[in-house]
Image (cartoon, rainbow, N blue to C red; front, side):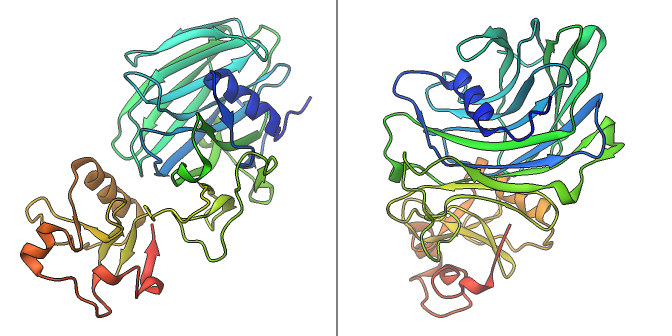
Length: 360
């Protein structure tokens, strides 16, 4: 039996994790899928990267689904839960109709059964994932039908054992199908208050790299109706503004999911390379901001390289340390004076020189 690309399955699974009073999912969901070149796999590596984080007040789930021959399906992914204390960032691994679960080596992990829409086992752990870091989740079959998940931060090299779930004796190995989705949940929150979020799902590999995905089978789509929020994309919308709900495949085969719901434009939060400066928009003032060196908090960092992994690491480091300078801020004016109005200055990258911006 094939479970390929079942959006309803994804929605139900997410509700098992997030079910609570006053919760409703946005009905239109960015999604997509991959198909590996072989069936009955011992392992699959799923890779994620959170490119734009909607922040601590958000409820969002980035997930990849899988199915086991002769058995049921499951999912694993990264989540933000604004009501969770003390950890708002989590990693989740669940399989329906399974027998047992065990913890790994992440402090605060819970291994437990779930119920509601079906039953099964799940492992949930706090994980302080970072913007721009690529996380590889390796799902692999061990003895006695235990499926374990190993997580690696490919940016820092840090690794974790998330834990495992025991399947039924008659179950076989993994199907070649992988489905991706991003769901945002509303808890008494207006549609226009939902911030911009973007994530990248990289092509999976099976059997420890021996099996790759089929480019012709990659797909990107959205599912659901427009009944909950006005998710239509505004004409000419930019990343971080009124993008609605979007799913697309880029030149490398990565599936990119975006959500930016708004009945009015949202301020842009994406980072761009402008000439040799990394720039974005300050969410408070609406002015352009740049990344600064730690040794010079009033000057923009002049990047020497343009490869995307390096630039994303600079953005991640600056976001965690607060090393940014905003045009027109007291620190800027004290050092540089009034904001200039002429082109070719980084302060005017968004207002005058948008065509020169290169998205990371």
